[in-house]
Length: 383
Image (tube, rainbow, N blue to C red; front, side, top):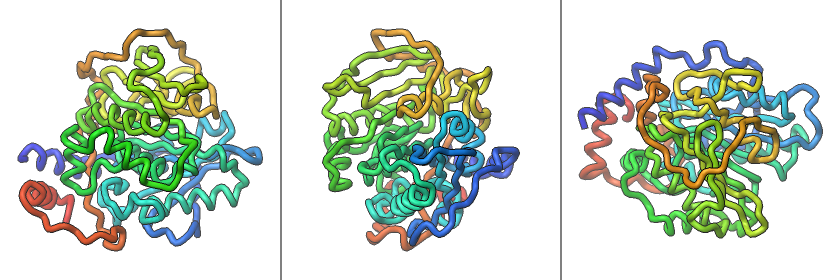
């Protein structure tokens, strides 16, 4: 527990040492008047010049301690949007909701269909599509860490809205409903069984298919979100897609493994990338003519652009790396220097300060939960 307290305090101090808005793309504009906004989020968007009518929309959800502008700068999404011709929408967390700017992926009142933060993001999407004549059949969502977990929420709560999604170092939908559960799931402890996760997904909306295509990304040296979460996400989505546990094929791309699951027609409906030696963050390839983004905290130059490959998987952009067939996806989990960015050690989910977000009464903190919440308060991360 003392180690937990020290790490929590350290990330709070690191927030003042790193300014995530220093020097990124300043072209994001604020989206105003997008609905009742029960989750009290902000929205920003980017439209390339001369964007065609009926263009795709990519919804992007940043990680803890990040902002929309900083994540766009690091990931290179707006640069790719210019090249490939699609619109971008960023939901942005506010400190009044969560002091560390984490989306509240573990709060039932923010993760249910038509409630809280999930509904706010849905309202942003509707406003963007209507205002700019975008294609309702080509809407996608991606996110990192807490944003990845929130992408899981959006894909589960509104599967009819999205053609595809990408979850980077995230968690499956419905895996946690409290702060202590969130910490446990991040570390790979406990949680619903695969069958229970599949039932949670199937019951999250009245939708019966077709289902979004899913891209999953995870570093082997991630000490913040355990790799078992990537497996759990894959297991959750195999159910609705009717897929076997064993992937249809495995490949290596830029030195990293990719598992692919295909439907009965041979279409790729799910992929899982395992990034060798990488810690907690979004995988980037920033060098060369095809480079995108900029390395920084939680934005890691791994020699592969998740941004470009995700867009290729969705069918809205091309990628260039050469792939080779492999019999297995297994990778050595040895930690490399790539994973040693100081702020990669922890992302912290917070108990929200927006009381109206959850309709369920808060349970009395007892036992282990009380100990963990006391630690959070000691670190100044919860009140």
